[in-house]
Length: 350
Image 1: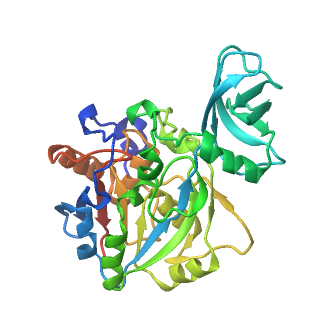
Image 2: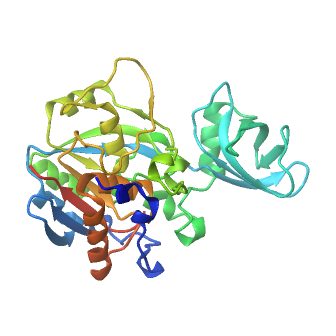
């Protein structure tokens, strides 16, 4: 690792807005796939549906099965004026949920916000500017109402964050199961049942983890030095069945940065060790050049924003200079970037 690798500015690259995908390809698996062989520093350009060609029966795909929940509510303050509430988590602490709020005028403790049948009351605000709210509905009623009254949260760089009905399916993986994310684990968006069927016929197994992606995934690195950045905390879980699969297979291919963060949060000496205990765990692991990645043989990931922790994570695998070099190749080959964009498969040195 070089000192330059610890400077945020070192992860900047220029990107014309024309490369930012605002919709996925018509068929998910028709997105482009850049395959990078670290062993001999070689690149292939194919389509994502060709993925099974590059994997062997001993590989284990590790996928994040978290599901995006509609968390963007539009309404008004009881006292008058528009209000927007972005629910940050479905996990409540004593009936109180974290949220971001935009509203006309001041936002005070005790203010009530109306979203159809749903009413939120501001109970507190922390030093980071996050609000905490209680609702006039039970947790199950809240979850049900969100599906009828809230909008799916797409990133601000996609159509200025204005989602439509199509995003309700486009911005979910086909295997999404556990409700709780405010952003999709986007590397998984390329998978289709036909791709899974072909992988299965080749003897390639799947293991599922759950990490609920938080709004912090969009948090820019504002410090000049990356070690001064405060990494966001996210909840994750691995059930016993999938834990056994992870321990039994050493050639793991992480599907997305969230899957890798789960694995590295549990990794020790080439095995996945998950501490005993029930329920969700939390991780704020930050992967960047100099961090030794022990848990995977490869990574499937999209092309990420400049100066983002996700770009730094990819750089922790193959180095910052090589990562940025591959991004320049992607631009020359008209790859599409970010959440609805194309993908990269990194196959690590053996």
